Each structure stands twice: as C-alpha cells, then as structure tokens.
Image 1 (tube, one colour):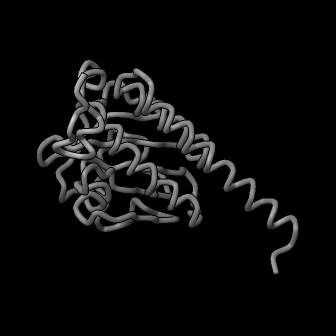
Image 2: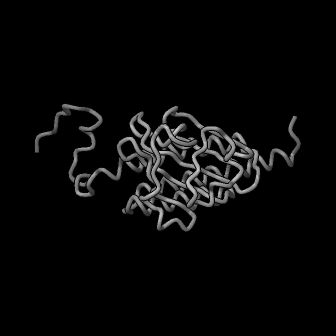
Image 3: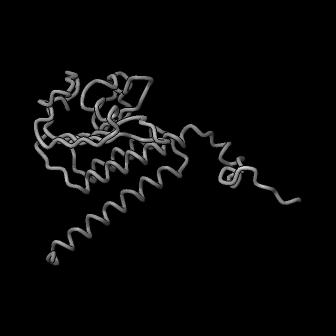
Length: 197
C-alpha cells in the first residue's frame, strides 16, 4: 500500500496535470491567433515538465517546419525543416507514436544534427505526434540538457497535448464569423428539421 507522502505527491501531480489541461482548453476557446496558442502551450509544457526546450513542428506537405519554441529561435522559425523520414522528430511523425529517450538522444541513429540549434547536444528527448482528425499534422518535442527519466505521467501529458494542439489547428482553420453563423446543432444532426417561426 502506498505511503501517505507518496499518495500526496501523486495527487499533487494529478492536480498539476488537470490545471495544465484546463489552461490549454482556455487557450482554445479564446479569440487568439494560432501562434499565440502554440506559444502559450509551449510555455505551459516547459513549466510542467521543467524541460530546457519545447519545440513544435507542423507539417508543410512532406516537411516538418519549426513553428513554436520556448527558446530564442526567432531566426530559425519557419526555416528549420526536416522531411518526414529525417531525424527523431520525423520518425515520430511517420510512426505516429510517442518516443522517449532518457540519455544521449544525439547518439540515436535516427537523430538529425542541425548545427544551428542548441538542442543538438541535449541528452533527453520526449516527442509526441500532433494529431488532428486522425492525421499527423505535426510533432511536439520536449528536451532536457541533462539525462532525464521521463515519467509515465509526462508521456501521457505530452500525448494528450499533441491531441489538443491538433484540435487547436483544426479550430484555427475555421473563420470566426463562421463560428457565429453556423448551425451547430445541424453539424451534430445533419438534416435537422427547424421549427417554423
């Protein structure tokens, strides 16, 4: 049976996860740009995981493009690209699965060295696909400078955040005016009969 301190620690971690998901959910219902939402999610991931780097790559055809980061990558934003068959990030997108490496990620044979990113030398790597409508539309990476054993909770959080980012991308395609004018009930029940006025 778990000790009281262990139970208290687990409960605190679950409460942190819940607050994280609540904050992400609030980003998605506000009138914010996609870039603001992505940067907000990146900041929350860094706070939750205590990682040194969080990068979000989004699909552009057969490429993954760096679109959000907690680091100072402004010059690389939109310029850092890799194919779906390149690097750990490309592998995650192609295989549609979470990847966790606790040490020496840069030694993995799938690793792609960029040379312009400090993350090239980081030890720990955790990555999840971004999913929208059952399609991979990007990848979210969490990296630590030092070796780091990723917990099951961190892995589950990143998987869920990948799904939430996918929802944010789907919502970003919808014009705000459309949200106000569309018949939402008819989206759920096609051919819905309207009451006469």
